[in-house]
Length: 376
Image (cartoon, rainbow, N blue to C red; front, side, top):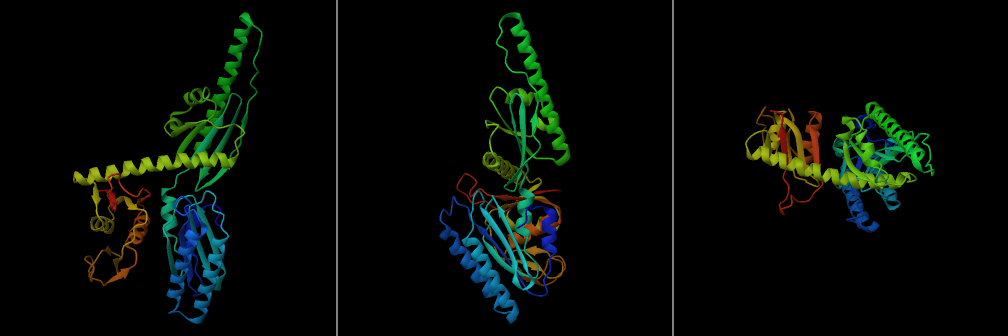
């Protein structure tokens, strides 16, 4: 299994080539909120595997045998799957060349299955583009713990323990002086934690910061943070210093969903405002494909689950929704089964940001459309 899904691991997977035997790629939405029972997603998995077998019918005997084994292994894996927090599965198999990779993600993946000479990693590339890294800090008066979470996995970094004196029960003037002494130590502890957090940010980086701890400590800790870190705070919550990684991850994923929903809302509003004003935004598949063909797209916005047939020029790769000949070079347009996926692939090749919208409607009951923010 790919332990860390990032651009480098996906590049290596995409470059993998068989000895001529096709690679089976299968993506499946296993979101327990939509599919609480295993049989709910197994029915769809079997249909996807039937599609793979059907595609293999036109191939030679060895290829058909390999694809058949691929399907058997994929179905066995899914039948034994323990979903946990995962909502999407990607499987890549080529039994004839001993390839097997599995990817589990806490975000749904659109159902699809494909045969090709190499693994179809475009949906995962889009996932990596949109996933962000969260850092959760649990802090109290003398200890701190750091957690980094991304793609549904979490790792604890080095903890902090500072020697802070305990409470002193003697009254009068000495009590007040001792209390100030304690608070001074606590302040230095929080500053120490803030400095370590800044070093962690500079070393590995993260996109968002979650602060956790006692209600009276978290605000004081936040005041000690560098401005770089203050701007990345997305939530303040309570978590026990004894919380395990699973508890921290659950809280992080809940915050991540909130952040993602807000980001989607803002992106949609921005695209619509720019398009309505005739500035650097377009709405509608034909307009978006035109901008992609001209390398003008800065951010591509695609609704989750969108699947439409389209066309691609055999010579220059220009994308279109219809026609027989390319408007750029006059070459022949050939059918592509999923123009939305082809658009995502083109955007990634151009270095564009890709935003896959997980929300079903825009809040007014209207279906989302493909849109884009433009470079020029």
